[in-house]
Length: 77
Image (cartoon, rainbow, N blue to C red; front, top):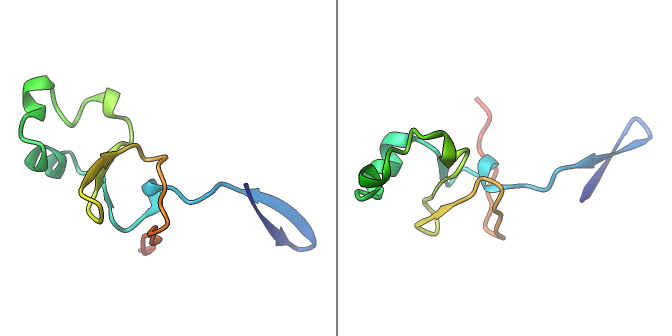
């Protein structure tokens, strides 16, 4: 767990994850277009998918909690 000092107090920070990476896509439409057989199993809109998505960097379907050394934070709007 990473730590951050703020105003003399340390706070625990959650480690980065795919959910916050610019390469991670959770769009149901894009997931279905990249995994055509998924529609036969249900839909990318299903609640069982949770926050899972596609890593465009590694061309893999991953859990949002995954992480790799090539993580690049998503730009904030």
